[in-house]
Structures are given as C-alpha cells and as structure tokens.
Length: 67
Image 1 (cartoon, rainbow, N blue to C red):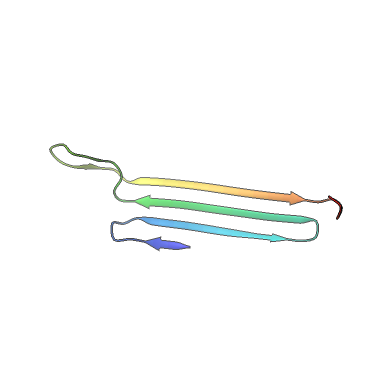
Image 2 (tube, one colour):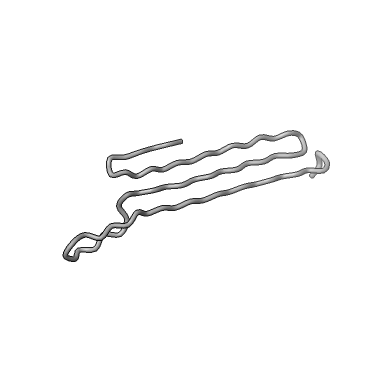
C-alpha cells in the first residue's frame, strides 16, 4: 500500500508471508513521512518533518502436526 497527499505526507506499508505444513512466517514494514510536523507560532513558522518507521516479524514452527 502506498499513499501520497497534497501536504507531502506519505503512508507506506509492505506485508508478506507464507506457510507450509510445519513452518509459517509473516513480516510487515511500514513508514510515514510528512513535510509538516511541529509548527510554532512565533515570528516565523518553524517546521520540521515528521518521520516514523516500524517493522514486525512472526515465525512459527511446528515439529509435528499435533503441535
């Protein structure tokens, strides 16, 4: 999934996984960015970009079908 907006934000995500009879995996990566983060009302507006990232992984192993 990818998205983009008019104030320069992005929200991106990548997921993948698979399984067999004894092994399964799932992984996810995500991130976001915005050109407008913290805005202070002073003489001039100070702006910093906001960025965030995340990751997740899951691995499952069953030695026997009864597990």
